[in-house]
Image (tube, rainbow, N blue to C red; front, side, top):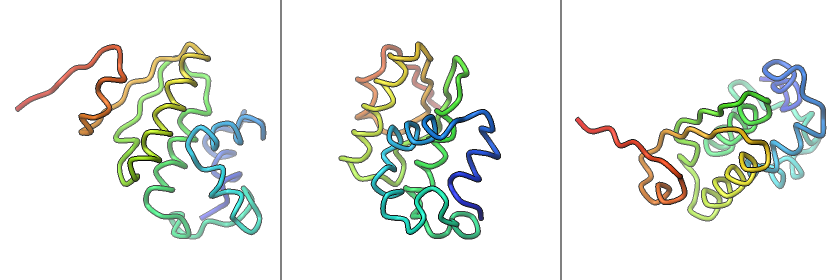
Length: 125
């Protein structure tokens, strides 16, 4: 129910504002945040109800990528996103991990994303 800043403070207490803004940009949320009345300090409502489902997912992605852990694990990061936003998100994530040396593990049903990954594992019934 808190603001974006409060969510980062809760889950990523070591993050500086610059790290938060970079993670939000990479998660394709910078324009959304700019439109909020108080920016990252705007209360988001219970369960972030003032954000769309795709925006909530991207906020969780931003929180996940803001850390310095060697591995980032994302489950369906493009779920609920239009093709353009999904492509921009994945491009930003790939650029980020190339720059940081982190490893990106992604669980997805989006077959169109598979060619972007160096390795894939397909699970079947």
